[in-house]
Image (cartoon, rainbow, N blue to C red):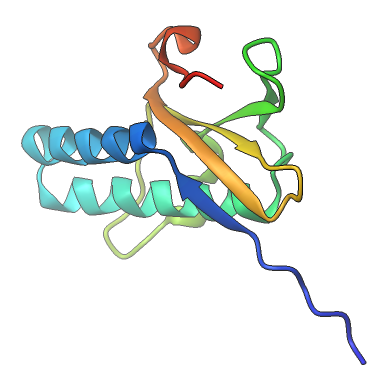
Length: 125
């Protein structure tokens, strides 16, 4: 009998949910509906990529900030997020995340603009 694959899932923190909402509101105001849909698709693809492989190429170990924390820039998922609306040309955000001990839950801690000072925006342990 084939082995059943364990299902991993991403869980967004309160801060990550707020980040996501603010990113999409800002994108809508600045660039319109189609750009917002493209960016949302890119974020969703990025989260899928992280869940599929927490140490995927492009991800960075950020244990210097907190134990087990990693970052992954949206630009590494651009090609897989190509839709009928096009592609996000210059994504400017990265995801901060950590896998729980059992590796089945990936905590999405923040989704931050790449110009932000990372350490100031991490939730307390």
